[in-house]
Image (cartoon, rainbow, N blue to C red; front, side, top):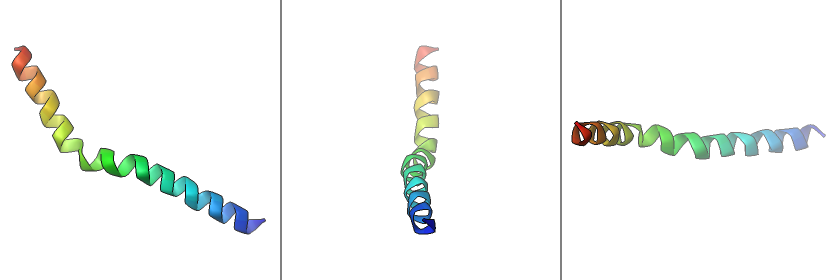
Length: 42
């Protein structure tokens, strides 16, 4: 039973990492994109 929880925990951790890593990596690009959008709007 503990093996099942270990595997479930690892899969959950992998899913969270798969979502968070690209967001964390492309955060500066998103900031510059929003800044460019604000500049072009002004």
